[in-house]
Length: 447
Image (tube, rainbow, N blue to C red; front, side, top):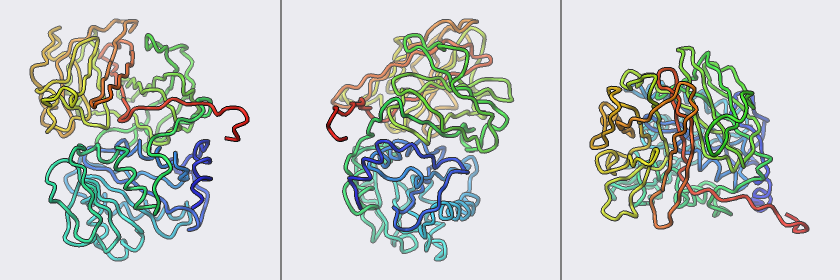
């Protein structure tokens, strides 16, 4: 499928598919559009990395889509029914007669129900089932790849291509390079040219996404997003003039806008409730049209706040492990030098993706001996009693240092201001992979 030309095009592609207005009609001579359906308490964050891997292989950016739905409700009726309109919209935008769907965890239950209706199944060319539902037959008769992570290795979908990754965690199976290779080959009929996220010229990076309330996946309606460039060493804004501003509505969409891949940024969302979310990602080495800034209003009552301490959440779409016998199998996450990943805070079985840090009872006492309630009872979350002093003018610094588990040590550090938790909350987003550095083509190379 002219893979070489698609890869070259993918290295410079900056198109936007995520916004509702984006879409040039195309026909079935183009690759089949891909839709990702997340799991419980999820969003497209679980597949953000793989979206960039697809575009790194020249897959058209405007044929990548994310279906996000409310997982705060106990049933999937709305999620199933609303998928009809979403798929119809994707087909109308792209001119495709069918779509490919990749679903994770609870999303696989949504899809098994959806595909049980023959008319609906007819719109799906291929289906990927990530670590979720089993079945004694192909869902809706659609060709299926079933990918299974750690856990019961006898799980299967009869008639599907069943692939097992016993050393990959539940969310990790959606984002690892090894699973990406199998997914790409299943969908496209050939191995990918590359299995990593290919860096782009840092002068040509674009970012788009959504600012959402978790876990309903509705936009922070009435809020305002301001994006600032920040000083790498301090986390402080380089200028009070934002590089991008967007008034948010019920969709929460923003961008695309230009960033410098060599710089760091703060995504600040001011809400109608009177508080601001300060989100700090790693540098963007490639255009990302599925970035998410998340708020969790339902959890705010359980987070103690005061003028003199900072509340800080760290998120990564590769589970944090803290209880493995072999130290190489554990992650490290230090806030101002304090290790917050240990067997009590992040046991492997808890599948922790987000670590909430705040001063419990506002008593200036730190205690990492046990995970805080109710975070210790909510899937994918944990809580740490961690006193981090704040300053009225947020002029201080908190250093967030991550060491990703694995034989090859990967260290990433993000410095952020010590915002007071009364009206501000801080979030840090780490990648689930080790980023590569951009290498400019040599003159005369023809690339």
